[in-house]
Amino acid sequence: MNYRLKKNLIQFMLICMLIFSFILPLCSCGSAKLPPKAGDIDYTVVTGSSIPEDLQALIDDRKKENFELTFSEHSYLYIVKGYGKQKSGGYSIKVNQFYKAEDTFVLDTELLGPKAEDDVSQKASYPYIVLKTQFFEEPVTFY
Image (cartoon, rainbow, N blue to C red):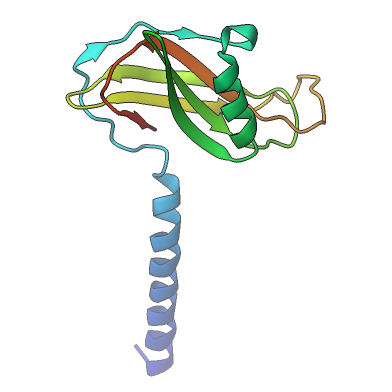
């Protein structure tokens, strides 16, 4: 093999390695390893007037950016995941998993965009989800 061909091959391989070193981490960001499940949790998704006023005020303050928060009131814990400003309406949030792990509670959610055939508002939206469950002291880990 001549020198020029070797040089081009090495450059090509280096470029491929650089590209893959940036692309692979981006592809795996949604597949974070969840801790092992230790138990199930009963919860309810709450909306509108079922959300305590103080909590709704916190949500309104944070809703323009991605956010995660917990809020306790009486014997209940409210767990909130917000996905920030979206360019249109029609978004929804799916709870993939919510369970007790060894030393934490795990909430794994997913933002679902509007379907192509849906007639959605072109006005910006701020999707978030509020889960209500019995109060517990352990931290919540969001995925």
